[in-house]
Image (cartoon, rainbow, N blue to C red; front, side, top):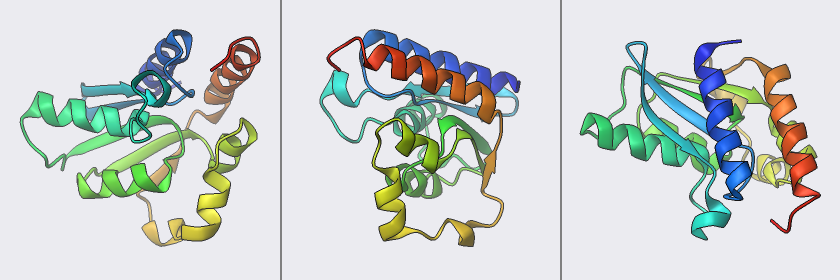
Length: 153
């Protein structure tokens, strides 16, 4: 497994075990170093924009002292929703590596499929989005599914 995706998975586990939100963790990498981290905190912070990718972008911008993340890559456990995808593009990230697909996100109760039908367009992004380590991320989604059934969040 890619070491950065491993870190994104660990970030997601931290969030789901804390009851912060869904199984979405992300890290931003520049020159082989993690410069930003984040996990879904929608429930914990009661803010629908606090997705893992958004949190990692905010953290990386703070760490680097810039709003421009050119030269950086994002690793995230689930294929980004449109909000996060556009934020990644606004931040000028070079690549987005994701584990689980939009369909996988839908399988655990997220609305990504419905939004994909409305907005679509991923096929026009060329090689910006790259799937990797899906099997490991699916294990994380299974953990979330089991936890979700045992808790109120």
